[in-house]
Image (cartoon, rainbow, N blue to C red; front, side):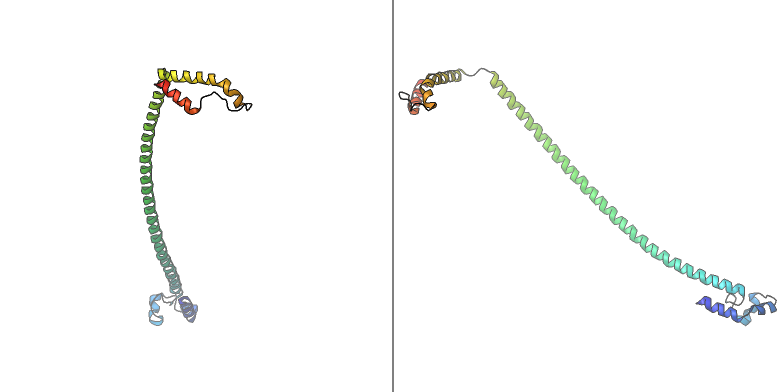
Length: 184
């Protein structure tokens, strides 16, 4: 708007008037037209328009600078907040890793101990298997197989379903009594 006023002001002061005065400088026309730079001459008018345009541009740039500064502060604060979150997450991960490492070490020790116990039990069982059985067990096993061989012919027909329950065979209770008497 200032540019339009200055143009109108300059139009009111024709270029012929400048020529008739012999191209006087602005300081010579101060009395008739006002302060220098207020559109008193084409040079001043041009300077005024340029300075107004510069002022408008600088105002725009200043507003833009303020906006950018605020945006920069927002970005920096967001960055700081994200950095704090990342640090917290890193601390949590390190804590979790430490607890997992401790649990792993505890499990490793437990597993090692269990493995030693299993190996000791295996060695003990192998030693028992390698040693000859006790004489009572050998005697018991021999009598058992002799009894089985003795009773197979009597029970064979019954087990095949061809004959009824064999007679003359001891009942289970009688066999138990006989076994206890022999053991004593």
